[in-house]
Image (tube, rainbow, N blue to C red; front, side, top):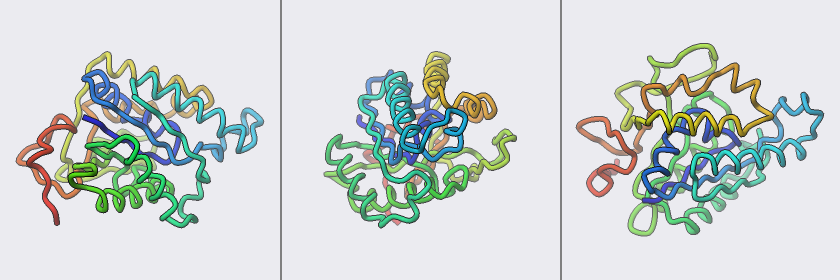
Length: 239
């Protein structure tokens, strides 16, 4: 099957979802990554004396390296304003997502859950525009499933204190992974050379030691799925 992950920033795919992506690629699925910004506005740029544009160029390269490490089929890094997605006409973002869907024809679309896992405005906007596009495109000529990456409320390890999760009863899938998949995830995080201080402070993969959780939009199942590709043909419940 084909999966398209859509995130706002470089490293979003590696800060927790990475081992699940590595598993999906290892199992032969086509996994594509679309990153909406280059992430150049991060304050980490000051440590290197980079401008926003210079930091963005570096982080875009790091994203492509991380995606290749995880086994992604493709990685596209766009240049919408980092930290400014809420100020844009959302139709511009939606058009970019439509283009990606036309290009890779995913069965499964993946982005952040409604709370964005951190409350970052760019995360919230990404959720909103991806969900709208999914609702327009789902069906025979579009993705069949919208999977929303999240954490589980009562399993979040703090610090950091800003993380948010979803109630356990809302979780539709938890994707387990092997030690080799986790190692790929760790290698992908190391690709973000300019963000190693943050990686070391947060140790993001500790949050998904028991598997990577997802909310499955408008789906109901008798039990939590162990694979994002499971039960696609019979799962959809339209509200």
